[in-house]
Amino acid sequence: MTELQSQGLRLVETETGAPSRRGGAGPSDHKAVTVDGQTVMVPIHTELARESPFATDRDGNLTRDGESLKTIEFAHEPLFYQRQTEDGIPYWKIAQLHGSDVLATTVLQTCVRYNQRSTSCQFCAIGQSLEEGRTIKRKSPEQLAEVARTAVDLDGVQHMVMTTGTPNFTDRGASVLCESAFAVRSAVDIPIQAQCEPPDDPAWFRRLKAAGVDSLGMHLEAVTPEVRERIMPGKAQVTPDQYLEAFREAVAVFGHGQVSTYILAGLGDSREAILEMSQKLIEIGVYPFVVPFVPITGTPLEDHPSPDPTFMHELLQPLGRMLSEAGLHSSEIKAGCGRCGACSSLSAYEEESISDVT
Image (cartoon, rainbow, N blue to C red; front, side):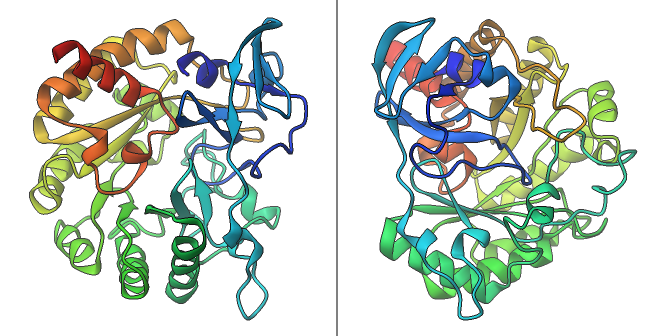
């Protein structure tokens, strides 16, 4: 799985299985595949994927350099994708299936930093899917509640992720997430993870919790100041130390293991730097969800290489051990990226460490 996520996958027919996701606010240009019973997101639209040693046909026969390996499965298109709102908006433009059982949405498909490359995150494509008509700018609380209820009823969705572009430099989207989470939880009993930058007032953590948010994601992406300033010059104005303080305040509200952060390996941070930051996070009670960077076509980093599988293995193996020793388990996160685990093979290393101990 680590090799697949670093090197991508060539498909004989790109439309096999559920539609792949292109563009958007987070990891993209992937397709959900199930390998040995675990669903993972594997790059298929990147230049690296087109040259990958891994290939598969529509029946899921996986090969590496032409040698047969095993059979993999593709996620099926969810039934809720066939529905639309009364005013004709397809449900899949409001929220999408991630992994095998996660409903994900970008509540606000704009960001105050995006239109200026001097401030925008160089890996982000939040505006692409909007420009190409694959989503809508603002998902109303009513729309999200309607789609969530249907996705649970028709497809057995187990938890939901709500992220947002940053609309301002005060609450940084927490207000939008509060009203969205409240509407969804009023309509259907589904665990929710909200994701935003650290708000200016820690009171927002209590408000998010009261609105029905079960876990919180605040994403560092890169861990060293020099990489953060180069890759995401606007977001780097919120320093790692400010994030650490926000993490402490958030853990006090959501609980040990219910706050997480996304770290993109391969942007320039060393293995040692990522592990050092991960140790600080783990000591606070934050789950560091480390994933291999995958370039998105059309962004300034579209030609930036993904990390080598060996680099990822040498990073995730000790991280999995650190998590297990600290009692932080992805399976115990109530909702969100860490619980899903499809964008990284970290959970497999975590389970491997648990097995070694037992």
